[in-house]
Image (cartoon, one colour):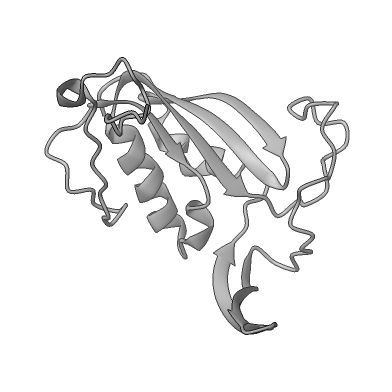
Length: 174
């Protein structure tokens, strides 16, 4: 017997199913009325596209401002150090260099090729675009947040497959 209910959860009442909204917005100025309304935030593959320290700082603080007191953010920043740092107490000893981009960055502000691949019949074509990226050196996010430690706490920092990962927590109202 085919199930007439398209909901994958057979016990769910369609009228009570959670509604999800998607928002496309400028991270420098989120169009939300209230601060402190979210429990958690993810900021992954975002910061390396911002061109100035002021913009990077504003984005991190804007995300943190939207969290409730006690709310947490997981932030990933593309690391300039693409090899696993040896002897770093914040690096999991079981981790290795697998999964890193393979890039060698001559400086922190670089153009990185992006290959847009298209399948055309039996052939695969590729168009290459240069995209701006800022890669983060160890300790750079701490410097961005230096004046805000009264309301933003860095709970944990670790290196993960070519990224600096930060677990942040909102301590108080800004």
